[in-house]
Image 1 (cartoon, rainbow, N blue to C red):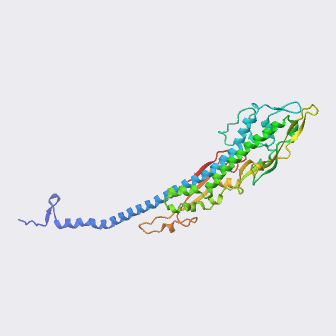
Image 2 (spheres, rainbow, N blue to C red):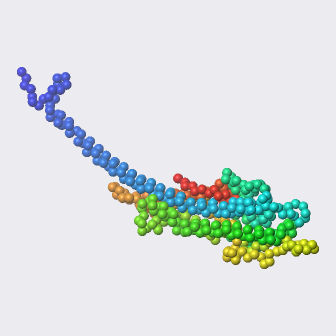
Image 3 (cartoon, helix red, strand yellow):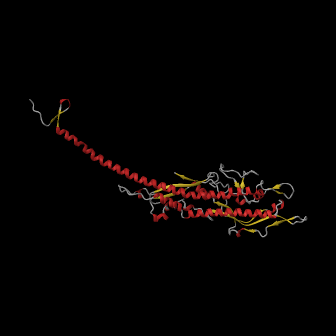
Length: 391
């Protein structure tokens, strides 16, 4: 009888295998584990570091997008409010005050025809009105229109037919012309009333425009909204550095600082220094019943404001085109350290900042972006500027 070895084990189909063979096969997993486990650990570290730097960049992009959008809103507000002051406000105020009806028209000296005070002031170039204005009707509802064609009479105010390229003051303005004084039966006391109301309205509009420009100048002088928004969202500036936070974005090429809107530079407020008007002064006798009166000396508007009586505020064409195309904001940031000791601050630096950066293009655009060079301030003052952030 054969002797069974203690080192033999029953196998499948009655075959037997040595026990030491199983112990040798169990060690085969050791070699792959020496390769796979370190590779897996490296992959985990790589994924973690990639996620960390991606998260930091996304946070920076969000911070600069938010800051640029908020800062550009100041420009949009100035452009829209100036458009209102230039066109819609005086158009509605004077139409409701002097349109016929309810105002009674004045008779012509020739005995035939009549003239409404509203038309008289428009023909003198004193006030703007909508080109689609309907005589005797309520002021136009322009909300759905992409172009508000509100303008002065071109023959009376040719200097304001187009957008002035610089400051355009009027040393002497004829509120009621000599020709109107001769042809219209306008009494001297009524003419004084028109002058007072006109000067009060435009003095108020000038105060409103100057106030909103002053607020705009304060908000954009140091670009505080950009700095504060970036400081709160980026998490990269210390509290003591808040005043200088976001300098890269502000001083970027073709950025906010290089495209400032400033009074006397590319933003202009236009004034009248003196006003003269004509009207009939009745004598109380039959021969002659009246004579043509004239404000003598002319009404000195600099006594109310050293600059004179406000008329219009404009922004030059060049800056409006630039704001329509968009300003560039390149904000640098410092990449965090990583497990592999790769210096992303040198490897991924931008030419604009000398370190990694995120970019935003921010624009202030109006319906006349492609047709009139993004000019909705004057002429055709249309308060429909919007802030647009390009991805």
